[in-house]
Length: 290
Ligand SMILES: [Fe+2]
Image (cartoon, rainbow, N blue to C red; front, side, top):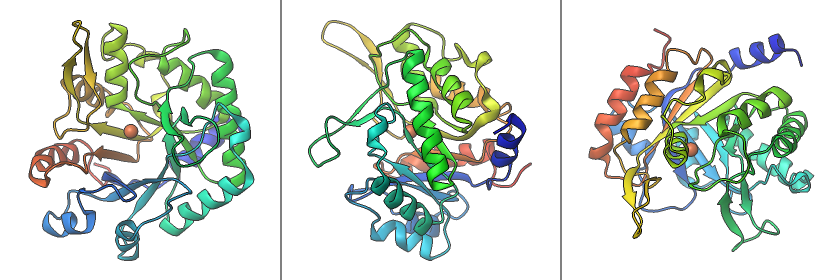
């Protein structure tokens, strides 16, 4: 695929606006249908996270069957292990995407399970940040795009500790270049990475292909400290975003020319705590192009 063909493919994806995350069977969480009825105009899509073992749940089906937009977030594939992308998983996953009418497929790029894909094996380990791993991940993303016909958006995962010598932004720039794919940038995960590395929140973004970002995640996180004094940002999905996350988001928004969706991962909070954040996000990224 040429660069121009990829750009045209990403340009053709729908602009969704600001959305809310949801996951199978995780309670208590905000019901998007009730939220949208009580607070019109604040959420424009639901990002539904699940795996092939659990599938879709009544909450997200009620949302899409009432005409709501949804995206699909996998929680169960290891891009660094090519054998993990078996035909049955790809077929089942693309079936969920079709049922939701999701315009793309996304998810954290790392190791979602140790050993076989099975109950009790779930975890999320970050990728090894090397050129070789980026090439393997890109091959997996490319194969998944070819097999399903979907745009696949790999996401930078959360972790305090990474192996490998690449900056995580350079890793995903390589994946996008080799796989001809768009990207999902999680600004909270990036803030955690930058702080753990001892850098500035915006380090490395000037060389990142921001015009390939299709979706952004934001989520709350607070400063935490270990018993021996190590300070870090905890990816705890509280309502309030860390200031570094706002810094990254506000730097990206005027530059991410193909951005279609901003998902606020907040479903475990009290609705009232999320409202000011949703308002600010909608002001920053309106559904219709300004
Ligand atoms: Fe995320």
